[in-house]
Length: 112
Length: 112
Image 1 (tube, helix red, strand yellow):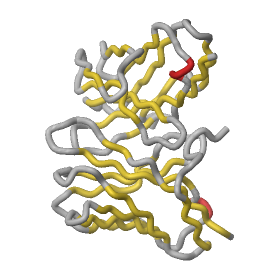
Image 2 (image 1 turned 45 degrees about the horizontal axis):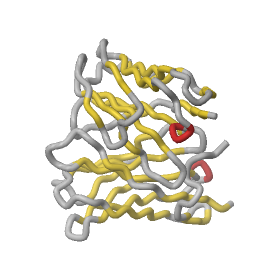
Image 3 (image 1 turned 135 degrees about the vertical axis):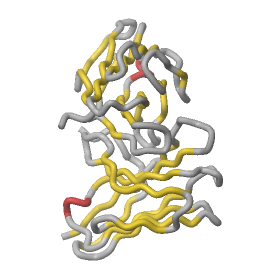
């Protein structure tokens, strides 16, 4: 059964629309960021990453934007599909550490 | 193409029992991590290892021990399980700092 994300913020989008999921990170000096997708009962799955020397990076149907001024990361999913329904969370790695810091996540629901 | 493999997938323990969770990766990664995931919370780091024979404490290490005798394996031990250790446990590995962490499918542990 589902044990993750019982009280997460939820974003509901119509199938075919674009989705934007936001994340506020904690350390202004963090130099590497990752977005993960987690489906119910499964482990986190890598979507896209970005280093602090970049502002934008594009993948297949996904784009990550990094705004270091306000410590904000966003994930844009184009033409959202039912298979995109999941919990999405970001991770950062502060300087001088091996430890990744994970956000609590946002649940994306795709409406048919 | 196994990636990160965790065993067992499910386990139920009685308070005071002990068990070991096994994580194996076939990507020749140096870094390995153990996390726990609880409802409404982000992944929390228990212990990690930056190479064979090395381990270090994470955010929530109490009640857990780890060993990294072989590069490909990272074991998480619970010497005397408590109900507070009921959680989903994830293992992850990465090539180095600032690289993608790949996750296993998780171990769902209930302590009664």
